[in-house]
Image 1 (cartoon, rainbow over the protein chains, first blue to last red):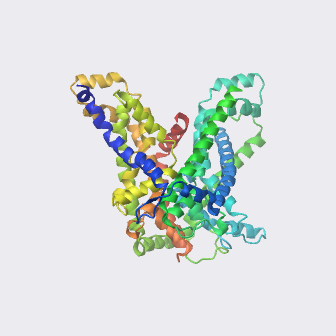
Image 2: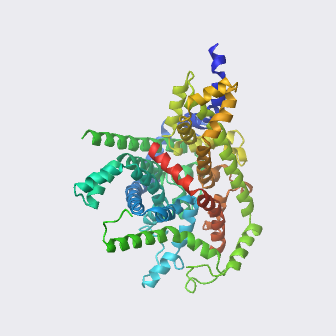
Image 3: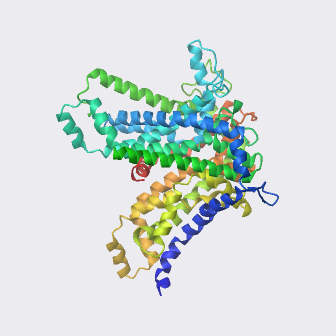
Length: 295
Length: 280
């Protein structure tokens, strides 16, 4: 019998498959079901059709969160990757021990949990006695309340974000740099190409697939940003987003609806709206890449 | 030196740039250390915390936070959460990776496809329903509630499959001929051969679990089940009356395990992350 023959295989994958089905596949399906229900976790759920979706899209917080998200993603992803690319090229210019030392130094912030990065920077940004304001003070500048001034809050978050993620992306780009055949550079040098020309015509094109991964992955994680703005603004489920919601992002809004206002159906629907946005953006990235290849 | 054709001015600039970026990357961490190892209440204008000024004061602060607050318990919970998650991810991940990488059975392609597809599904969509399921199981504020939902890691499976694929079929056949059972082949042949990958995955899982803020925040909402991340977050909240000294001491203690891991396993960590990016 074939079942007997294959039984050992199925037994070995069973623990993974069972837990995966239970804590990954089932939640997706139940989440879709909840998203059409009005449910506070206590009373039995009541079917409300697409009312949750309509309510979210019409809400002011959703508009604010999406607007913040678009500005944030548009700044932090390109900036983070440019910095990472610069760091990788810089580290690649060193050899031996120093290459390792600089790589490790730039990577160190990645090792810290995101919640720590946020809490350390909260004190660096603190008004009056914070490190940054102390430096401003040396130049005779007045103290800025970076995390409570709507004109600086988003940039304060971007700075923390780049500080944390640049090292991560740098390591991936460095691995990509190592995979570029040395012969290409030698040939270019023989043809009299300058260092700058080599970067533009060999390094960047050969890094294509790696940069594509880094950008796509960066976009997907930036769209789900949570820990850093949550902690930088000292948020809780009853009050989040910082002053005038300047650091309100979709996942924060979703978590607030679930655990602050206890509207689980609405929060589930929020997750699906966000997922559709993420998938659409990812698909657009893949289409862009294909279109570029054909050109 | 690769920068051989560069004039000396460029070499100087290169070093200046590299060193100043290193300062920006490391200073916030260094600053945290200095705040802890300074006399409490010293005004910043007198001591800008550019270097540690009082080692005994720092040790006092650490002793205070470990004895007067619940930080030590949170530390234990975070460690247990990380260790159990690592064990789960490694055991069930390697069992499944062994099958997916080396054998064929009906349904293999379909199951593998579904798991790989899941890598593209954002956490945002699963977190609320997974919380609801955990709550229905009665697992809120329990260790199993923290650990089990995160154990079936598609990323871990993917990484282990990449390594297991390199195991030569001959070795498996040879073990079979020697009379080894299917499980013995996994245990005595496959596992030792991918021990490198297991260590890398264990380290990455540790970093991820220790740094996980969102899941504990909703699943273990009772103070007696707080993780380090939550305590650090609470110390920082606008309602807390903790001073910068206490907060930074908590931060420093929370930073020690991952920093220590990094100093010991830096090559493995960097390689693991580079691999996930260039092969994925």
